[in-house]
Length: 216
Image (cartoon, rainbow, N blue to C red; front, side, top):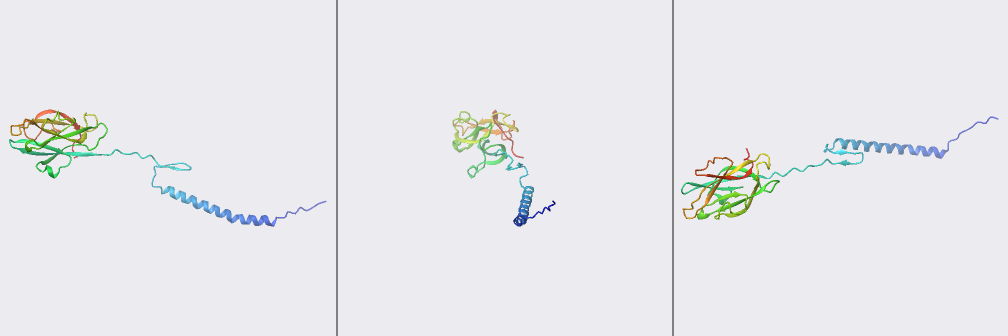
């Protein structure tokens, strides 16, 4: 006996499928829009050096650069009675130094401590009103003499020629300072040149320290 098999679609199932179709379409649209925004943001990323993974963005490592703190040492000079020269070294000429003619940038040093540097102390003398100063590595006046007063650390330089690239020797010269023949003493000249140009009668003392040449 032949029986016809008749399939009948349940009305609730058809309605459910019809309801899902627009919902799935909307989900696909939202996904595509999100994908387009991601691609656009990626292409406009201002940090091309970033390293990307599938789940996060890792910023590239930022390497800190050392602070450049070089300053120039200025030389001022004055010619006293007897035609002897006296000098004043400073990082910035001030109004109280107006009895000196600042005619030269001698060398460059660091204002603050840097690797391999040593502190440079300034000492000054004003005996009989004749002002001049000296720079030295020692914090004591055993180098400058008893007529000098410690003004503290002025800058930082180097004690060796190979402590940094580009260093030059700073030579120290001395000459008698008679102070009207009543108080013996010395005056000093600092120069990157072995033959100083300022005045006469200078005697080579030693290499005081190492520094950088003046800026060109």
